[in-house]
Image (cartoon, rainbow, N blue to C red; front, side, top):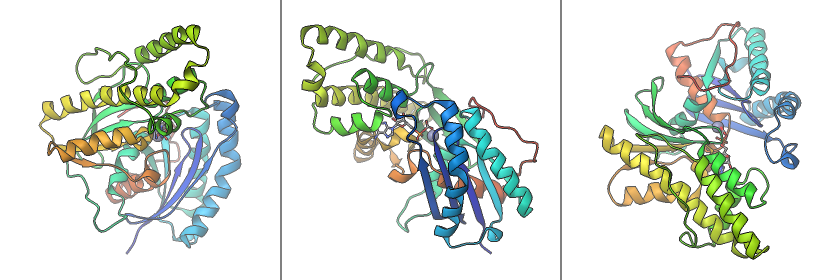
Length: 338
Ligand code: KG4
Ligand code: ZN
């Protein structure tokens, strides 16, 4: 008999609901929040209020799109962290009430693990699923991790950022250039027409498999401050080249440690996950390793890169099979924990 799971994601500024039937996604709807645009970043209080407004319509729409009745759902899975507390609480309260009302199990999902598990969604007959153990570069707005994935349930962080996340580096660089939030996709857009070797920015020296991106932000800030003194129109004139050079630097920094992790562990199955995995430069860099015969690579479909509830639903499916359910007393957490 098939298993139907409702997945709910509300950790940051996207309210999302998905319905999965075994490993197949029947609906995956996202209500984006536009209230943050004028502030150059996510405002936590506004995010929780918008989640409150969005959550019921998004879930109703997901049920209609999936053409199922709520009584057919076997379990409800929701993100319990890491994320913004007020945002997480909206998803948590809804999921608890839903489980209680329908007398079905409640499943808590770690947002970062869920990003990785999108590789197990069944969406085409040709899709290759990564075999365990594999490495996953998980890059988002709040985290940058090299994860050793041992099973659907067991994941170990073997490298991570000591300051800014890769997505944050994209967004902060974009902000310095006067682009709106989130700037990552815009840098990707302008970079397509630019020369990645036009400008060079320093690479950090961090031991082991860890990352640092705060120095890059500072060097872009100082470089542009000096350039604008000589030419106030410098950014406009060089937008494409700046975007391409910044993107190239971030991708090189990311790839350097991923190669080191592959060498160190001897693992040649490499996956990519998280919002920044939508970046065309990073996807190309992974593809190039595959073409060179170094690794087997696994790159998520675009709709599963940035925050979505399909990832929560597939993670919920594996926890359902393992019988890992949460009590009504469960509470969300803000910082990553294994
Ligand atoms: O995983 P995600 O949707 O949310 C978090 O869990 O943080 O990641 C969002 C991040 C943002 O920093 C956004 O700028 C970045 O992913 N991002 C991109 C691209 N699309 C999204 N960065 C670079 N290039 C892109 N195409
Ligand atoms: Zn995310």
